Image 1: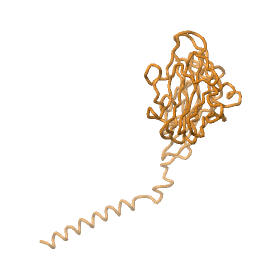
Image 2 (image 1 turned 90 degrees about the horizontal axis):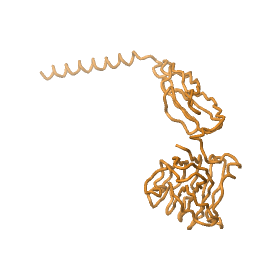
Image 3 (image 1 turned 180 degrees about the vertical axis):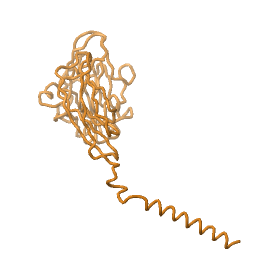
Image 4 (image 1 turned 90 degrees about the vertical axis):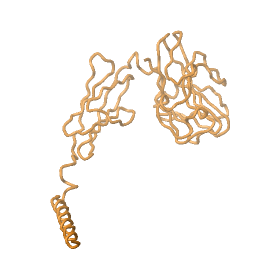
Length: 293
């Protein structure tokens, strides 16, 4: 009986081994490479079509043959989208549109095209002048509040961004510009904020008030949004739209980037930042926006 059990087990093991060997021997030598599962020549071409009746709105349509997925970049970074995307470009300028076609096996090819937007959308266009900090002319659109005449805290302008730095100790500085608004119209404010390091005892605040900024005077009219280590953000590295990474409540006690004014005229967009134990790399801003809803 014992011998019979051993014999049966041996037979089962023999057939199991034979089956595995057969399966392995049936695979071609090029099972990983050269088997047609990867499409190195996936076509990333696409078309751009203006949407009739819609201001500065476009349809991006990728060709779909052998395309598994589409990634797009319209200037704010790569994102996974659809084969057909509807985009809005409210501001005048030249935009580089990039389509990354993903083919079989994860292969990728890239095609880029340009869209020239002649005029800004009168309703949704960015009212901030020099918000991209692209040139010296952009930098000149901003004025300093001179809150730190000694230079303990200072805004430094570079191509594409502005950064506030502090050598340590309590110090602050603010930049601002005037913007024309319409009574009872809603606007949204936003900007990309980033820092490679966390801070302690630091604030970053955005105001939209009717009070004219005075040299050497701390601005406090109508706080809209911001960062604050006391409120729990900016304690570690961050990078994103302020509306997403911020934690400061507005004058009404809620977190929001929407503002509305009781009269038509000029308001002042003020960006004020300071603290004690400031991040070594500073806080950087780019793409500052003030748009009608």
